[in-house]
Image (cartoon, rainbow, N blue to C red; front, top):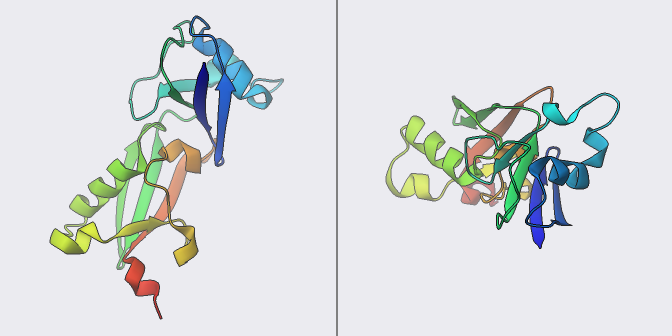
Length: 158
């Protein structure tokens, strides 16, 4: 069966795995370069997409379709908006859309103004962040942190 695996540093892989395979085997298939001389299997954490708890390396892949493999247990996310900063610690599996919602609430942005805001990697309209990706996709060990900009897409028009 096909399984989608999100890896650090903006890598997404579709791998073929047997549903009876162990999670540890999935790591070796999806991320062979991270399990080498400097790393071992135990350094890698595996999460179901948008689930906070890490999976046991001995658990079976089963019918699960999307995983996040990461070395950071928490990723520090900082979001800048109009000179204010929202920060929070999230598991690498947390979807960006939930972090965006937390930031809008945390920065006390209400109503339609909040609904129109998007996250960007830089202060450039071409760096819009895909809300359906996990935060771990954007960060890598040892930094375990990322910064985004919250902005109205219309602010770039000009």
